[in-house]
Length: 310
Image 1: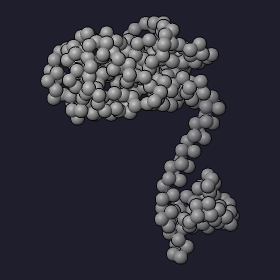
Image 2: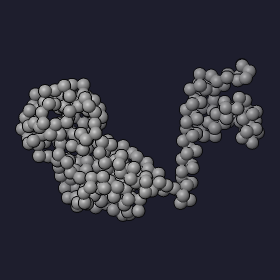
Image 3: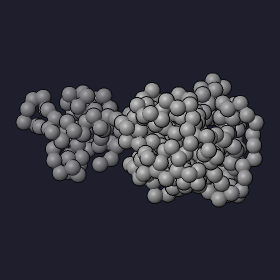
Image 4: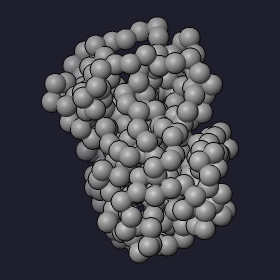
């Protein structure tokens, strides 16, 4: 099927008849009929019940109509935005982010950026740190917000701007006895199951989380694996174990999870803005500045180290 077929199909449904749809579209009724016939031939089933007057939709037609309307609306919006960008009337900036950024710097950065650049469209793409370099190189995003544990490296074609470093805290069920502590030691977590995240074959974040706990003297029980941090915190709230999150995640989070500092866990998380080295348009610079402003700290050079992300 193609967009013309879907457009004519929706026009007939909206107008109530092929003749009225043809009049609204300024085309011959035979053109409408031909496109509908081709659509039905490709689907292998009729979309209209022609035994009734006026025609009614078949089960296939009822399934197709709302989805076709959504697709056509998206195409119109894409066309309008692409033309506006081409004419210089609308800017576009793709931003990739790890989900933990939702809890800390991303919302405020978006607000600051939109206030200064109201005509730049922000396309926010949720993506793990490991997948952001490929999106940057393809031009799908212009800025990536990544989180690393321990050492990481900087490829020559990408620029890493450190936004902040932070300790990890234990995310515990609010009903846990440990949740009432002001701080704890890693060994205190040994009797609990560790909920690992993200569940992704390219991510080493979960393994590094476990390694950091073991280095600090904890050997937690194996627990569930979650695809992303929201799910992990939901499993914690359900009493299925604990997990580690950056301290910034704990600043604005759910009341059924307690966030307790771990006194002897020295491993820290580093949050960075990643951009392409070959170009730095004003909008990219402005968004990175908005991210840095959110933590109130100066830019720090990122070390060239072995990559581990989450």
